[in-house]
Image (tube, rainbow, N blue to C red; front, side, top):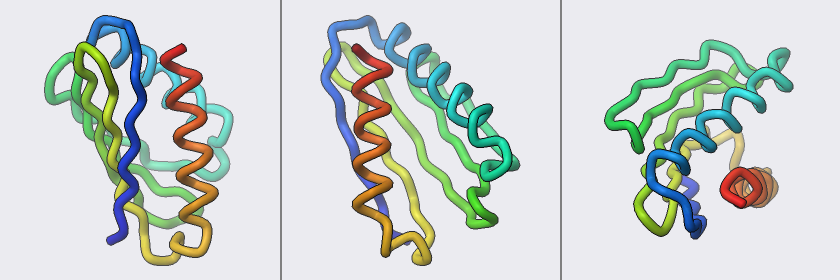
Length: 101
């Protein structure tokens, strides 16, 4: 499976950064409810979570981890998404940066 790796710098506490990312994920899932289904979150630590869901019927999974200075995100994409990988990466990076600003 292809993997997207994203990072974004921030000046928040790791827990605050994680809370903002979780809130943004919930907002996006709500807005895209007709495309995103079966969302599951596994909280590993207060500042680290794993997610899985279906988007347009394709399985997606990934995780994020926030530290004192940055948030790192990894998303496992299905091979069918390779044609739009650049667009997905751009949109995710933009959403990540906005959530942490």
